Image 1: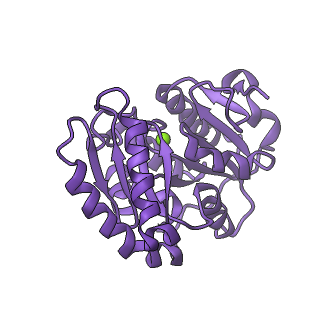
Image 2: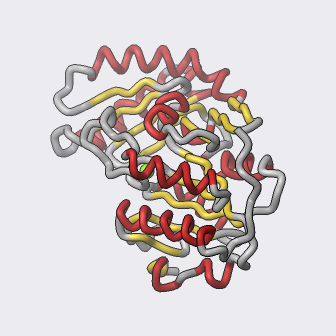
Length: 274
Ligand SMILES: [Mg+2]
C-alpha cells in the first residue's frame, strides 16, 4: 500500500492514546541530517541536538538512534546524552543500562578486517570512492565516483567475498544509497536491534520509527503493526505506513512530539535516568 503523508494522516491522534509513552527509533544520515557527498561531514545541528535532548528531558519520548555508522562515530555525531545508540546496523548498542555486541560480529571481524585492507589497497586511489572502516564492517562509498562505479564495485566485492572461505562463511554485502557495505553474515538488522532495545525499556511504549533507506525497511517491518512507521522521501517500495518529505519535516515532527508534552496531551514519563 502507498504510504500516506504523515501530517495529513496524523496517526498519533488515533494510535497514541493521550497517555501512551513514545519510543522514537531514528536513523541518522538522510533522516536527521541531509546526506552529504563526504560521509565524514554530517553532524547533528546544535538546534536539533537541543530539540532531541529536550524531548528526552521533559519525558515526551525515549529515543534510540539506529544507524549504519559505527557506534563511536554515531555517538560523536549525534551527541544527545541519555539516549540509546545502535551502530553498525544494530550490531553494537549502548544506552541506559544496555550494552550489546552481536557475537557473530566478533567472529567475523578478522576476516572482514583482512578483506578491508586488501580492498583498500586495490581501490583506494579511485577517484570519488571512499572506504570507511568501522568496528565490525567497512563501507565503500561511491557517491562521487563515475557512473557505473556501483555495479562494478558490487561485482568486485562479491568476487572477493566469495573467493575467501572465511568471508564466504562470515560476511555478506548490503547495499544502501550509493554505498556498499561488507558486514557480518548474521541474522540481525536494525529491526531486530530496535526490538532488543524496546525489550529493555521496562514499560510499554508506542514505537515510532523514521528512516530513509533500504536498511530501514527492517525497522518498518517489525513495527508496522504495533507502531508508527515513517519513511523520509516518498516511495512505493517501502513497508512504512507514512512518509515525510524531508529532514526539515522530520524536525517539524519532532517539535510536535515535544509540544505534546508541553501542552499536557501526554502523561509524563519519569525523567530519563542517565
Ligand atoms: Mg539513512
